Length: 232
Image (cartoon, rainbow, N blue to C red):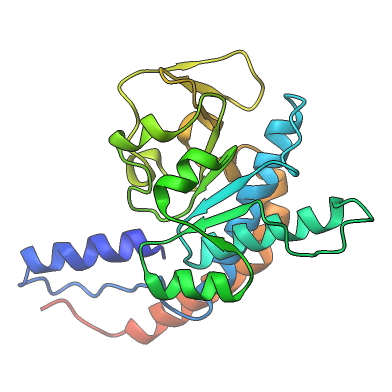
């Protein structure tokens, strides 16, 4: 039920052309979009809590989102909402300029600009952002990219670090709450590079659970459609 998993199965099927087992994927189903949007929101909220425990105010800092699929859109939208709520009363603009976004798809970048986000090249985002949210599921930060990330920048993911980022050669745990790990260059990995939204399961459940029911319903409906098929 993830885009990353869908792509892996699709690639594997090219190698196993004689496969007769049915494969059910909801990764690109409309009902899955709601869960993906909620995952993006949960990633931002968990990061807010993790940084708050370290006396760091997330909002008011320059935040970057890499990947403008449903998860990334959910994260960017959540950041905008929180910035709007915490903006000074004399700041009349509901669209802060410190939410940077990047996607390799030019159409996604155009949609982001139309929605009044600041679409920038990837390298500019890496250099400028204080907090980087990675939401591609497919190597949003490569090993060569770490040299552009400033010391003290927090890097956040919502999936396995093996899928989302190429970790630098050396990372070490710190004593900071939120399972913060430090790279040799000084960047800080929230939850050690693992999905930040799993840091606080109770909060994640509150945000995501209603949407997960839709995904489960889709799986049940799909399994029912497959009922009666025989492996040949």
